[in-house]
Length: 546
Image 1 (tube, rainbow, N blue to C red):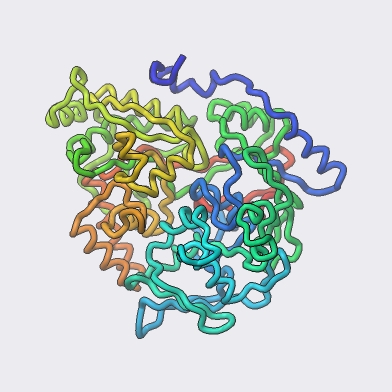
Image 2: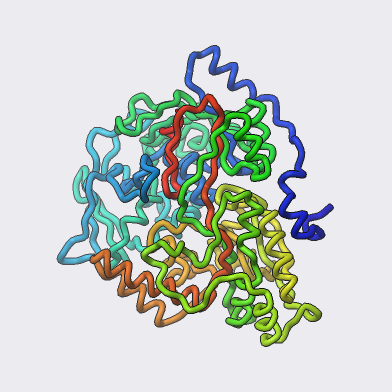
């Protein structure tokens, strides 16, 4: 039985029909390791099809930062991840402070933390920071790494240049005044120049023997299977000292497989459990952990010449076709209906006049006004990932939406791909090779929405079109650009919020995305897991696992 033949009732029960998938036996070996060594070992089954890059800038999206990003490495500006009852905030990382020059707001000074060592024993300093900027932003640098650059370049759209002021001070110049620039630095992680030299200037070797400044070191890497992270006992930040001695990341992209692994004791902790098996998890004594998460599961629609989504009526119809309460039911409550990029509780929500509701009759009328119908449907293609952190139950949700679209006269053919292919298409934009060659008119990447850049600016300003940013649709609107430019040149947080609310209101009224649900980032912990703090972010801190 294929997905596209399933009824909505089938889709709502899909996760319960998946059966008891078996797990590779090597997973159980970690338990014996823990018993023999006396180590506190946590086996964590992750939803990705491979271990993210370990060289300094992880691939596979924002979710990967919790695995091989903020474990092995540190940013200059960090995010508060040890609180669960409120949103976090920017906090010092490898930089103790940062500020824009009052005389020239494009120049930011970062004062670096003294006494920090890389895992290989070398010193962290301004030279290391400059080397890392060159690594990802200067193609002429001898150590430039295209794989890392592809991941982080779109996350640093404001960076124009960088220079060393002294041994522990760096200046970064932005392309224009940008009051929220420090949020971009959350994504820029610092790897060791000395280790790169020691390993013969080979990023391939560095991937197996990485060196950062983070709370864990990499002990073992088996691509597409596992990564073993061991506690860095010399970590510079006592408040983030790892509680577990070893965390074993186990690749398990299928949700039922992950859940059954926890039920049978083969792993201790999982992300995105199978919704249908949540009652069984609770009966087994497992804890279900979820929290408010600034994140939206959506379709990003192409607005290039020739795309059907240039018609506002079709964009609105696609939004009105979906019953979000049924999508939440498909997730067994582990989601929340989305009525915009951000939740109505956000200071950036505004007051849109277009209400994101389930109204299939109105959707059918709008489709007919656009020249299509159920008898003569709009036919188009969407690129969708088969799974991965942040994508929730990717294929079941996609297939559910596909059936809803079909009922109003929109016939979507899915092109399923592995997550990183979807991210590559996303970075290329709607005019990129993947989308153009496949006649793709929408990409399904779930988005982090934790700050103004990540929630709004990167999608809706015309200067964020590839290769600088991820305005995938190629949306261009002078009024939107003006609102965003005014916000980024304003250093009053209240005024930034007011302007971002107008940006969001405009994005919803123009139905620039198809908004589906917000994630709650659910995890399940076995009875032997004593602690874990789930932050209100897609960044999570594995040092809190105990």
